Image 1 (cartoon, rainbow, N blue to C red):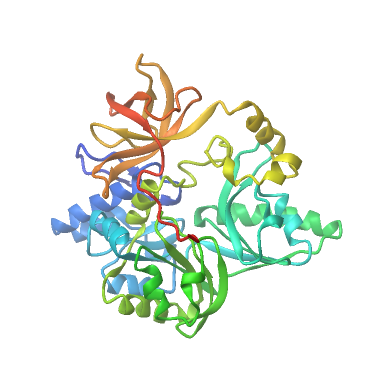
Image 2: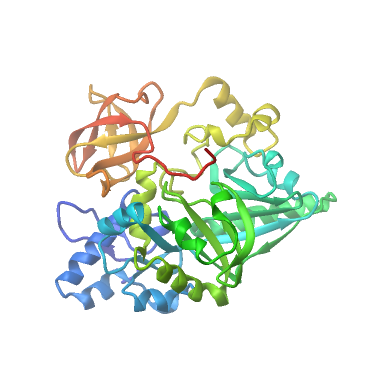
Amino acid sequence: MSDKDSVISDNTEEEDPIPLYNFAKMRGGGLWQLGQSITRRLAQGDKKGVARRYFASEAELKKTVLYDFHVANGGKMVPFAGWGMPIQYKDSIMDSTVNCRENGGLFDVSHMCGLSLKGKDSIPFLEKLVIADVAALAPGTGTLTVFTNEKGGAIDDSVVTKVTDDHIYLVVNAGCRDKDLAHIEEHMKAFKAKGGDVSWHIHDERSLLALQGPLAAPTLQHLTKEDLSKFYFGEFRILDINGAHCFLTRTGYTGEDGFEISVPDENALDLAKAILEKSEGKVRLTGLGARDSLRLEAGLCLYGNDMEQHITPVEAGLTWAIGKRRRAEGGFLGAEVILKQLADGPSIRRVGFISSGPPARGHSEIQNEKGETIGEVTSGGFSPCLKKNIAMGYVKSGNHKAGTKVKIVVRGKAYDGTVTKMPFVPTKYYKPT
């Protein structure tokens, strides 16, 4: 077994072996486990062992513009979707998660893929591929959506923004980049062959920073002349921040108020430094480990864990993302399957859990009180903010009501669990009052 194909295992009761080489498809709690394992070994002075067991050759990985900045600030770099990314910094994942909710966190998410669709037919083109009512969006607003396949399953989830009637901006997941772009390109060629007016640009010349937490807006306000108090969750602007021409979206992946900032590569380092400086040290660089625990506490799906090619948006609890007009008209891939599920109800549903015993992980079996299998956990871990085990997964319809008692099997032993409404931690999205 080569280093690239090695597994992470500390022979502790807390951890299961995790494949190293593809964190983009890591199953429930993997990033959390990885961060804890690395922290423990570093504390034991085993730096060579950490390098040997956990990290691929640098030559194999793509690097963001901020890679050296992460390393200089104590970032523990791991391979993620073909990129070298920080899983954590000098503080623990627990502390980093709590600090983001209490103060703020700055994430480098430049591995994700931003792209623009332009042309008078860009909206009708995109609506063939996603479930959102893009046409109904006001200019400068966006929404979560899902790219579907012919069977109604999820190819990827994405935040899509209508910049203008002939300009759409969207961001897709790093681990799905190649298949997403191939999918879009294939359909674009057919659309254009029939006379459709649409073109695209992939923003590889830009970096993407996510600034999240209660200090996000006050900190960013120091760096722009725009009044951010009039800029609400889901809205998009093109504006100058710290002297750079940026795409700013009030959104995020933590449940907190915050922003995703698309900034030209040449300005990314200065912007990151300025944000940290203006926060007077309260906003900290934050890695993928805390990002994973934050999104789980917020009840948000991770593609590859909680959404996959065989899971529909209805099953995933994203019915709200299917526009009213789209429910009536269809017109997107897999619409027949999805509209039937809307009418009849899905056979499985995504739900949240609070559980006892060790934290549930991906693939943990879910049973009813009779011991019958009713589903499977897709993400799970210990909540740094709630100080209890949380998880999400899929159960057979009829077992999905909040308060339903279940058993969750971890390492062959069944532990008590309860179906719980999500988000686990209340969201704090900035909306008009």
